[in-house]
Image 1 (cartoon, one colour):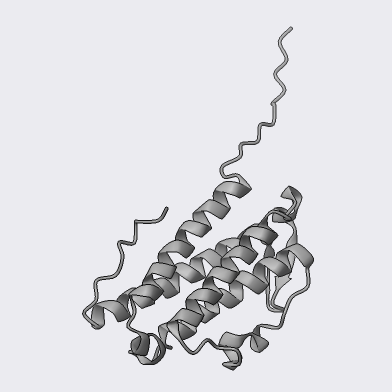
Image 2 (image 1 turned 30 degrees about the vertical axis):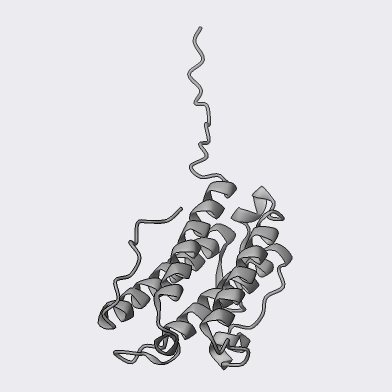
Length: 170
């Protein structure tokens, strides 16, 4: 007699390493957008009531560094107290911003290695405001970066600068 019971098969669509590699590809591209800005425009140019790209980059830094630390430790900073929200600790030069960007890239790599596979399905209250499973929180961090990088592309085009190709992510 044949067994007709269904067998549950789970498929892994992305491994944690694949997600990290994807995120780092976006971070590499956003870094090149920061590099493309003239120094003064990075910290002063705005349009349509948007913030400067330096402020947007700082928000990405604030979500990435403290965000990955919060995911690993479950200790979250308050969103309203992060440098992009308060202006405190904001880099003053492009070199300082890029150095901080690189430092946070190292933090991301270091803390990522500490995430246990089951953690991705656990619910967190990120920055005291955003309740989601860890995997959705990570996807939000990546989506937020893409959103702000696109604003940077608009600024660069308005400044007459050709931004790096958006598809060119290592």
